Image (tube, rainbow, N blue to C red; front, side):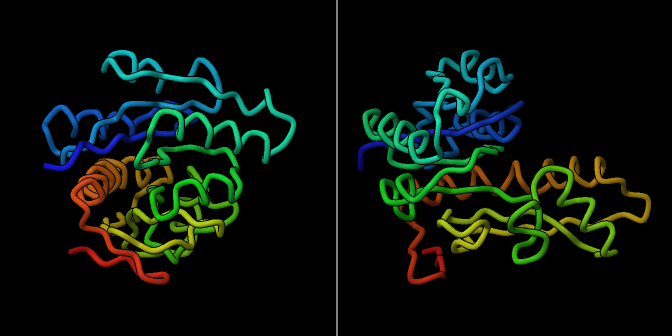
Length: 210
């Protein structure tokens, strides 16, 4: 048996995706991986309470305490390297980081995006903006994507996707909730499990699951 992989989850808010990961871990569904660190980009976010309730170490690295993206990214990388982190999961982490983090954890950073990439992704597409754009376009299905994070926003290798039906009477809020429940909370823990079982192979911009 290989040693369990240590997982850091980066958060900026309520931590619903973090909760999905904590729940999956408690059911033994993270492929032997263990969430050992929750890093918040601002103090007082509810995600830190979720971490505390699960007995997971929570650390605040407040973006406002650092003058530059580079200084913040270095602090983030240093903290995670010192903690021996194997996998970084961005779970609603809304702070810009630079290549120092990608270089420290190449092909070891996962993000969940609330749309079927390459639709409704990239700069400016976050939170409700994604669902507003999907509804404005009149798509019949949307969904969520877990991808490996690279320096280009939402452009890294796709690991998993799950489609979700769009209803005629959907609002951005109802669509956001359905995509969370039916897609994000399912495929994010699944992608983490696959990573921890060494089943994701990245070649160029493609991720293959063994």
